[in-house]
Image (cartoon, rainbow, N blue to C red; front, side):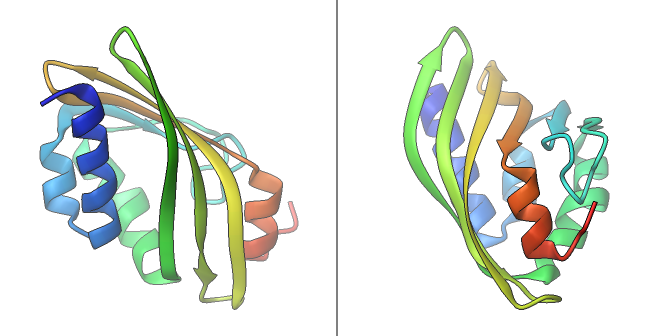
Length: 134
């Protein structure tokens, strides 16, 4: 599989809520980093490995969102890394607020496995949707 195909599979598995299938595409020591200021990890410090990602992100985020989707736009590839332009859409259940937010993901891969995921998003808009004031 090409790097682009691996990343497209990641998005499909994420959309379906197939966390075990998604984790199979990740290197065991993957660094998973949300944007600085993201309510789930304000510091932007990465979670390392599937267990940390599941515990701190998937278990928490999954039940909080309704009709969540990532709309994948252009995928740009350069030397083992991909930049993916996307939009997040969905409703944050605790506030009932909808989001439609521009986002960019940087994926790094080695030997067909994702070694790094880094998200860039308008955290101020996300915080507003999630009811955070700062």
